[in-house]
Image (cartoon, rainbow, N blue to C red; front, top):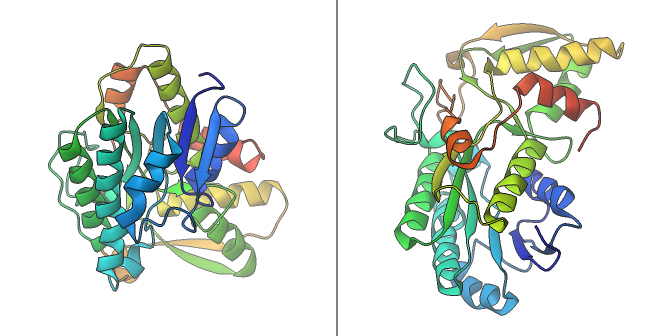
Length: 293
């Protein structure tokens, strides 16, 4: 990666966007734009605005990620997650530059027993999942050089996420009920940023793998209950108060949007095609909690 490389990061304050800024700082010229400058909810002017910036690479780290809220505002979710990515992809093609876009495990229905591969049939259960899948389809239709990176259960020490919510609730409450029948891989935002940087380095070195859709999550698997247990173990090690955890089924915690029970993603294609591997989720969580970035 060279300092003359101009990378446009769309999204300023999100978990992945912030991790990308930390990871890529000093390795390239970063052009970071938040919704006040590039508003994906109103995508009509995206093409001209991005063309004027003249990036060598576009990374879309912005999305409508309020899964339950999306059920009541589908038009906004589809504008941000579907229409805008299609315009970004078309713009990237016209500029002759690659696009990196992040997607989600929610494009699957979770009925499969094994981890999902990139070739498995999609069947989203929610407005959020359907909007993200529509965004993927729009990017694929535009063609060009693109990477769609599906990830899951993203967390960091910033923003709003399961880790920060659990850290607070585990110290505030005597007991806590957590869903135990949804299985996936908690993925640290810094892991996603580091893997993205490695993909960029391979491309810059003239040794890219095949462009297309890939899965990018931490290795291993757990439930939300197991994730909460791991967070609680760290609190206990710090001699901080920690609630008693009780496992419950999804049916005992109804939400507006349905979640897939199986969110496990097979990441072997990313390793095979691009030589990029992921850490175990427990190791990454420990690094995150130790204050590493």
